[in-house]
Length: 164
Image 1 (cartoon, helix red, strand yellow):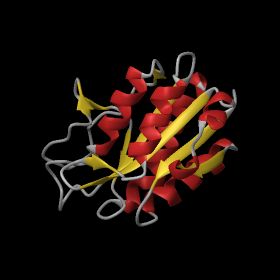
Image 2: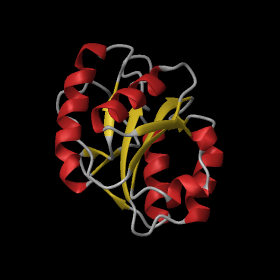
Image 3: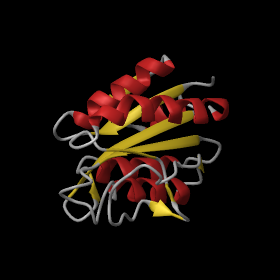
C-alpha cells in the first residue's frame, strides 16, 4: 500500500473516532483537517477524507479551509476515498450530504476518486451524496446504526485496499 493518510473534520468526535479506526486498520495516521497543509498532501499518495454532515447537508466547518488547501495543492496523481457521518432518521433528507462537497472538491482538484458504496441496507429519504444509485463514499450513521459501523468499515476497506 502506498503512503496513506486519513483526514477528518469532526465537531462532536464521532467522525474523529471513525477516522482513527480506519487509520488503525490501515496502519496509517489520522489527522484533523485543521492540520492539513500542502506538505501533508505532497507526502501522501492516498487521501481518505471524512466529514460529518451538518445543517442542510453541509460538510463539517473545518473542511471549508481544508477544501481550499486541497484545491490549491492539486490532487492530480492522488487517490482519494471518502467517508461521511450522518443521522439517517433526524436528517433523512440530507443524510451524509457533506460527503458530496468533498467529492466535488476532490474531482475538481484532479484526484482519482474511488467508487463509493451501494445504498442497499441504508434507511434514508434523500442525499446529495448519492450519485448514480451509490454513495460517493462510505456512509455511516453513528446515531441510529452504530451496530453496523464496524461491518461497513471493514467491507469498504476490503473493497478499496487494492486501489491504495
